[in-house]
Length: 297
Image 1 (cartoon, rainbow, N blue to C red):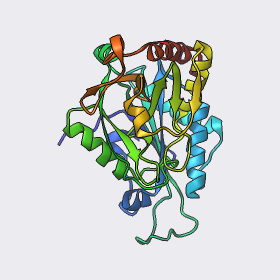
Image 2: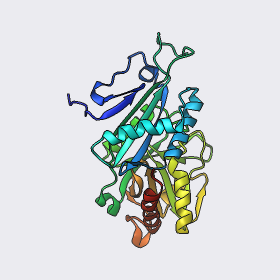
Image 3: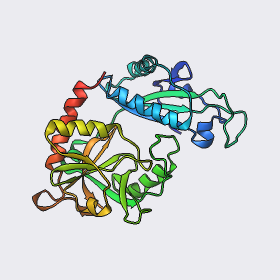
């Protein structure tokens, strides 16, 4: 069994090596997945869009009714302590807050539990130069997850199962389509990313609702499109829209923004750009790199 790396983590008020961090088996996060999490990219030891990520964590905790909301500077202090101890400058820091340790296993949580707060970090991996040049391969699948995708919760079995579909087919991500609407199927998101399409030069994403997570990069991409002179719109996106798209893009904390050039074995796009990253992706990616330099603290 491989040893855990001895990087510094934070757990309930203590800083300690990750290999020594222990959580009770009665923690509701372990028993029920009863908690929320957030992942924040770190560039040269600086947190990217920290306030947006913290706001989303607070929204998720609020929707779950978990009261663990220290001040902004307290969160910053915890994260920076862990970041400073890691050997790599580019990291992906992970925050997890569960409802806490209960005296018994019960679906109804006991009142007054003390939340479990955990922070760790790891080296950040981004798409490779080859993936940037060639784009990613994706498969589509029915979105069979629960209806509260707007909460970034630790109950990720549905996402794990969705990602397994693409992994078993040698693809990079699973694009999910929900087919419970009379006019469906409609695009929701990826197993671990937001999904965008390009039509006639405009970047389009699904409308935010309870079926999908409001990604931090939604507002970021809106800003980047405005900077680059690209039309931007959120609206319902049908499966037909996805399959006829000029370009498909993915965005997430780890992927940043990356082009999809193959979907279900078919090349994405039309004409000379078929199967290749397109011009909207190129502009958005360039703007993203400028934002990394200017919006990290």
